[in-house]
Length: 123
Image 1 (cartoon, helix red, strand yellow):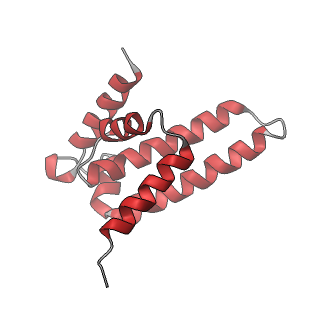
Image 2 (image 1 turned 90 degrees about the vertical axis):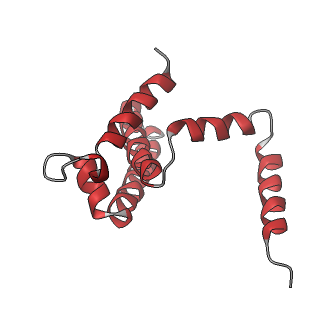
């Protein structure tokens, strides 16, 4: 089994927990977050991102690296809930990373800025 298989299986579980697919907010944490709407799961993404940053900073001072892994897992999980809400899947993120493969970070950032400038309305 590949890592992408694990992500796909988790994405399928998240999809099944959507209230529109029968997920019960009284019985499922994912269904509850989705039922409450974007403010609920976006707040969790912000919290988990902050906790991941704090765990990474702790690693520089002898902290447990596993705590960083755990916090990033929480961040990814809650990000996957957002992806599901907006009709996307982890495979979309993997495809975007693959698209960027071979581009330097500076080249990729410049390309995104150029595309954004072209999309701006002409005044």
